[in-house]
Length: 314
Figure 1 (cartoon, rainbow, N blue to C red):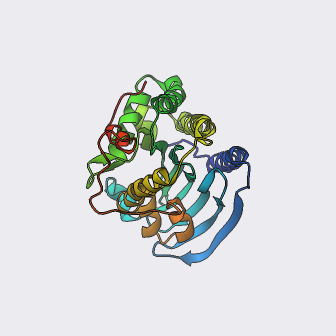
Figure 2 (cartoon, rainbow, N blue to C red):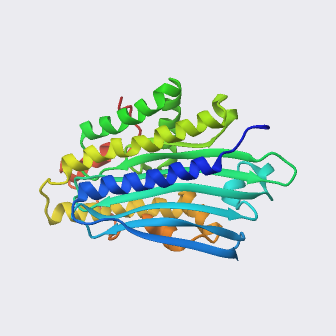
Figure 3 (cartoon, rainbow, N blue to C red):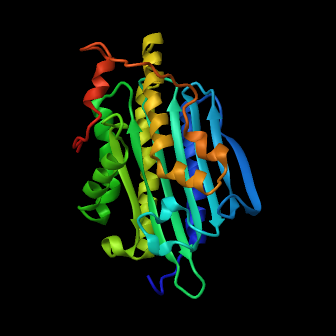
């Protein structure tokens, strides 16, 4: 990666614009309120990793369509990379780092509208006298409670369309990674119906330079709202009752379990002494756990369990 310019300013400008666009579109779809804006800054060398920096957290709670949604931008600096970032790259231990990204989770009110998650980010690991080591990561996944095949196909088709200009091998690789990553080992089920997940994207992955890797990041970031908003629009007015809401709250428990036990972003944020409110904004507003629950065979609730293993949608 020697000699390549790492244009952090361009990435930051894109991420802030993406955050604003996603919030505007989701607020328009909700129709009842806007996302509040919480600007935050960390001065000095706080946290276990000497973390400094800041961000812009945007949150909606109590909307007619979005029960709770958070779209977070952050740009932080640290003295040393945490264990979660160097576990599979021990040669980076001891380097300082910059991390910037947008991370979002949308928990809709209507049980027929899926929860969605997206994240795109850039890491730069630095050491005096050496070229910076950089990599991009991100993706998005969909977590329905009452699934519709046409929604799953649309979600994956948009993801594939975003990847295809970069090579026919890209979508299958990152679709598979998503299926493998968003998997609850203790439940033996995927978190939902998948999407895209990638990490450690740099010139060693496909032979792309920084600009092409950044172009791919933009393609993924821009495609999220194209994938999600039509599903929200189609399902948000579907009638539901207490039974459907109860099942949604029960299935949200799986979401909380994954984020706390397995999610790299959550673990990274907590290990670096990051801003807790922003890190945990992904948690559902309400959730229930039931002991040894089993849906009635053939019921509407039982359908989701046929979707919790990898499937080719397009």
